[in-house]
Length: 370
Ligand SMILES: Cc1ncc(COP(=O)(O)O)c(C=O)c1O
Image (cartoon, rainbow, N blue to C red; front, side):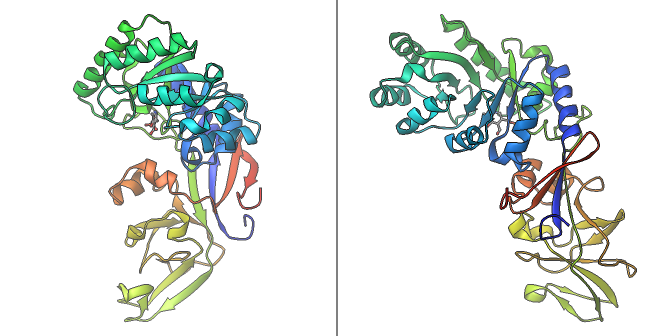
């Protein structure tokens, strides 16, 4: 039992350390650990604390809110906000020693007009090499940003871009992006302390092709998933207990809208987990596992409850594996026609997290109570 509900995720920090080591060995670069979105559902504070012991060079988040949350919990490693920071709030970033991103000249001009102490802010320039999302798209705009930075004695610490298709075996798009990025690097009369290009799949597959960078920005690989099989280990598993066992007669219907009808005499288990915990309603028909035996989700997934068809000998003391060795997040993602990122980031903070370290239980966190 974890806190007051028998539903929990297990987060194995030994596996996280293993994955960091895989990324380090494969990329031979410093690590910028991406812990946005509550560390992809793994709990940003505990993951950040652990990553500090592994001496990653930077923690990456998506908003100033996420960065402030980390600083409020005494995280001292450099933090970069990869997303757009409203120029109005940059003084908060300066006070918290949080690095921000220059996404455009327009942003920089506005930021300079609103802050007379912008030189105190650490900045990385984001170049858009083909994703057509955040970033500077032309060399002209880039040069104007560099000039403005020089004029105002800004602390431009880094330069980066983001790859759109590093999961493709065919590197055509990645190569195009890298060569565009190289042109930006060549045009700058500035030595950047940090240059970073690769996300997880690129870090694990590009090797020396990413020769202009000295760091990789990795999220999903740290948590155990990649398109490329490099011996990563999934960090998060999800389990729950059983609230009730029910015997069904042929013709009995289960859950809202009666989408499941028992054909035979069947046994079902009622589980204390639902879509409000991050499990997709389309999981009807998917298998959870009890003692490695697949048990089908029957009837609609409810907000807080799910029913599964179980072997007759099942008891309320059995543990149900929802994400684990029998079906990991990638497997569930495939069933739902999505990606492991969405499965992991959907894990609700209302689920208790049990952290494992050195092979045994280390800490239990429920964000409602801690
Ligand atoms: C700018 C940027 N860099 C790096 C990452 C990490 O990507 P991945 O989880 O594939 O390593 C993300 C994730 O969305 C991102 O937006």
